[in-house]
Amino acid sequence: LMTVVDAHKGGSRFMTEVTGKDAHSSKPQLGVGAIRVAAELIAELGRKGTRAAIVLTAGLKGPGPDGRTLEQAMLERTPDLVLVMGDTNSTLAGALAAAKLGIPIAHVEAGLRSFDNGMPEEINRVVTDRLSDFLFVTEPSGLKHLEQEGVSKSKVFYTGNIMIDSLESSLAAARKSTILDTLKLQPKKYAVM
Image 1 (cartoon, helix red, strand yellow):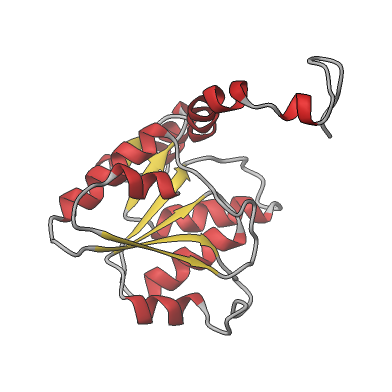
Image 2 (cartoon, rainbow, N blue to C red):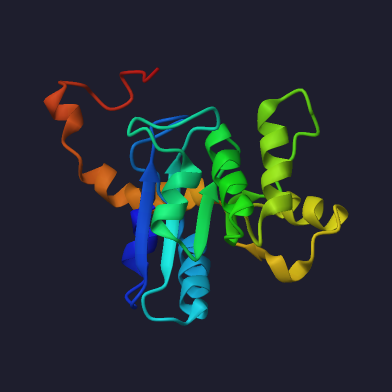
């Protein structure tokens, strides 16, 4: 998510809260569309010194390694906005803590649905979307689902596929990589599992 910070050159302060629960990556990234919308949203808040907390990972079942809960971290940091991504327990924990404290929530990857309430991720998606003030949608089906659920169009922003954006933004560096030489591998002669 540091690309959001790099994209915004104003007076806003960005903070991260990493508690070590449900981590998919140590350095998640937002795609170009979401960066633009997030930067515009933060600029729209319009106050010098705006505090935007970007919740990367969080625990739904208890405190993180430092002994604090997300709610405690948010009380200490007093963010103006909490940005959560995806459909993990981390996402739901961040949204629940922010909602309880009356902090606006932005959800990246909003509107995705499997329609299988037996999947924990589906519950996380639906509840997070209900709690969110800003819904960043990555694909057309998400727009349709949110419209069918009666979500106000004023809360919904189509940002495109953030995974493809991330891939495209990293492709040039990947092509320059010397890792195949380092590992003594030939192109198309190996598998990654």
